[in-house]
Length: 507
Image (cartoon, rainbow, N blue to C red; front, side):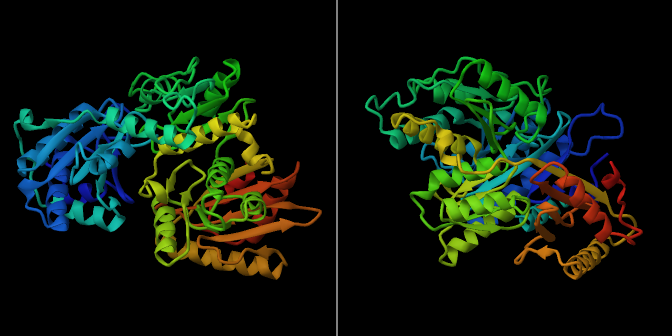
């Protein structure tokens, strides 16, 4: 049965396409079918032709994928959808999301657009499509328009032998190697990482290339690196730097192998986190602080854009230690990146847009959220610190450690949840002010309260989910018992909302 217009439109996930691509999980029927992928690829070709002004038969579009088990079948359908439109389609095979954007930049490929088949860190049965043009990733409105077109098309077969081949990862890895060589400028120029021991955990995603094609040629000792082989069932842990088991795995590998640094990527390598030699995790606030510290010398007084759930400790470090400005914006990597772009266009220097999730984009790198590029910047800093007899963690030694953080996700019941959620926020803020709590100014998302007294220290942020009937509550306490006290305050401020499920706060 042909997929309906309604079901095609449901595949939108913000600025990406995502769905269930593999059956067998109870309650999760396949939604991202081969037919859907074929039609969506054809729609992208038409959309790109209109946007670029190029006749569709002159377009060159690359197609890559991560290690997911559904990737080969979906890849064939995407290529067929492009070829049937007359596009010059190129099969890039196993790739990373950032490398698929760079396929547009590299002169050896110079594609007009590209499609990455990935669902980031989601379970093995999910998959999706990300789209790139020379301007970067598509916006939410672009995806809506693309899916509207796909709903009008029919899937078409094509001779897949007509697709070209592009071995993209070696090109991408070569560019990363040269950035490290230039950034370190070691006496042994070709081997700037000699003497450093770096452990990588690729989570059986697409990031295994970083060991053999970047670190090893540059002289690093990569003993202890793990889960480098692509395996779309992800047998060892979820390839997600925000996952506790994943971070435990890279921390253990780093410490047990006496490495200088551990690096962990998500499935499609657009995110990363790190572990220092002593097992300290460089994630969430710390990865933001580290990248800002690396950039501070080149961009003095500049503005760092982050998502909304960063801590007050990070703000203090950025502004009072690094002498930068912290612009705490909304959640969502596209939101953060677009805000940083907007600031630069308005004359405010903003070199870094980064989320606590590890999504980070630099102005010097096309504002591309690229985990491997963040790793490159970190490796350059580590090698340069070593020249001075220091460890790279000296860059963030003045960042206070986080004591305890929590997130509660409270369901909103009934219809028109957004309007009800907005009313909750309005009343919540009013009650907080009346009780004498400090409400953070310039909150771009939700209501944020700060606590600096002797009884309670920390902060909380109540916000409304963009897409789901949920109100997440993020909070951080600085001492034992602070989180519990903040939860008690939250309950008091949220009493009387019969459509807001407060039961998570009781756990």
